[in-house]
Every structure is written in C-alpha cells, then in structure tokens.
Length: 294
Image 1 (spheres, helix red, strand yellow):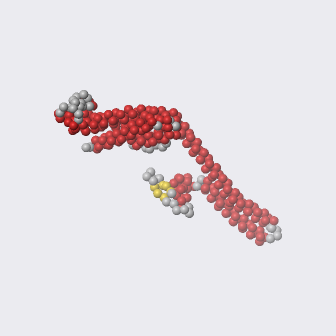
Image 2: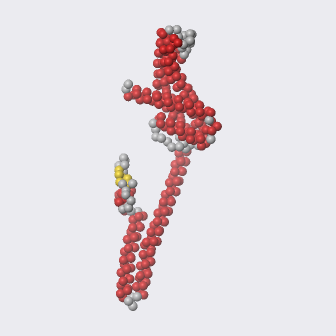
Image 3: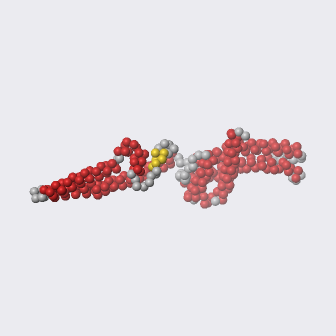
C-alpha cells in the first residue's frame, strides 16, 4: 500500500472513531438536553467538541468557545442532528460490511428461508454460490462506501462545528477591542509606575543632593569673611556633591530611554541589563533567530 493509501486508511479510521463518538454524544445530549442548555454547561460541551474537531482537521487547538450563547445553543441543535444523521450513515455502511462478513460463512447455520440483507435484501441464501457472490459484492460495496464516505462526512461534520463555534467578524472585532483595551490599561499602569519611579529617584537622589549643595553654598557665603578654610572645604564638598548629582541625573536619564535601546534594540538592551543584574541570566537564540534573555 502506497503512502496515499495508508493516509486515506488512517483518515477513515480516525473519521470512523470521530463519527461514532459524535453519534454517542448526540444520544447523550438528547437525554441531557435540560442540563446542556445551561449557558455554562453548553459552553463547556461546545469547547470539548471544538477541540475534537480541531484534532480531526489537524488545525491549531483553540481555546474556550467565545461566541454568543444563542450561537452555542444553535450549534448544539445542529450538532445533535448532524451527529445522528452522519453517525447512522456510518453504522449503515460499516455495520453492513461487518455483518455481511460474519453472516456469509455461517449462512448454513441460519434458520431456513433466511434472506440476504443490504443491497441484496430479499434474495434467499440457498447455497454457497449465492452466499459468497452476494456476500462478497455487499462487503466490497459497503467497504468502499466506508472507505470513501466516512472521511468526507467526518471532515464535513468537523468543519460545521468549527464554523458554528468560530467568532463572527463582529465578535472578533469586539474581542480585539477588548484585548486592546486591556493592553492599553496595562500600558497606562506601567507608564504611571515608571513616572512614579522617576519622580522617586529624582526626589530621593538628585533633589536631596541639590538641597545639600545649596546648604553648603549658604554656609560658605556666611563664612566667607570669617573662616576662609571652612569656605574652601564647603566649596570642595559642594563641587563633589554637584558631580555626584550630575552622575545620578545621567543614570535617571538613561533609565528613561537607554542609549543601548536606540543602538542595539530591545534584545541588546535586555542583554546589557542582564549582564549588570545580580541574578543569573541566560542568553539564547530562539528558532526565529532572535536573542532572548531569561
């Protein structure tokens, strides 16, 4: 069997399991309908079926269903109908093939007057010739129907499920607006925290040093005519404090927009920050070639 045939056979088995499971869940849903119409239960039920459909279609797994309650209830009704119809078709095709394969070798042990079923319904099984001819024809026909029809029905069922449980353009826009709103709120909070940090650094560092410089200069002015040595010492301390204040001010300015961020981008800035950190950091390259720091 070539690769295409093996792939088709695998698709048939996966589709067979999918549709039989859908038939079973549809029967369960009919009995549990009063429970499943509760919005929370309906969404959980829909999310599970959506994941099954995604696995069958080999598509990316989706998160919880994010469509309106009426859309979920509409999917529930549609799913029950399509699962029952498609599942019964599978049972008819695969079931007849299996039943015929079992019946043909045992036709002689069946009650007298037994007639063939399926496509040959009504034909009496009176001998090996009739049993083998009709049985082989039915097995081939039903097996072929199962081989070709089951994958198509399974994919159709899965696509209906995905289509009904996927957000519409309006819902996607609303979700996008909600995400952007949350992102903007987070950005504003981060911006406010950064402003408070800068204000704190300026108040506790640079401003305090400037106050100390002003006090020393005031004392120096008062001692100018009386104690020249004290004036010289105060001026020296004021000069040192001025240099320290300028250094702290440069540090604050760099934290607002580090030059390395403009020169080397975010990856370079994170790497430079990691090298100065007291915590061990690891630098690696992702599959996309981007440098990351952890």
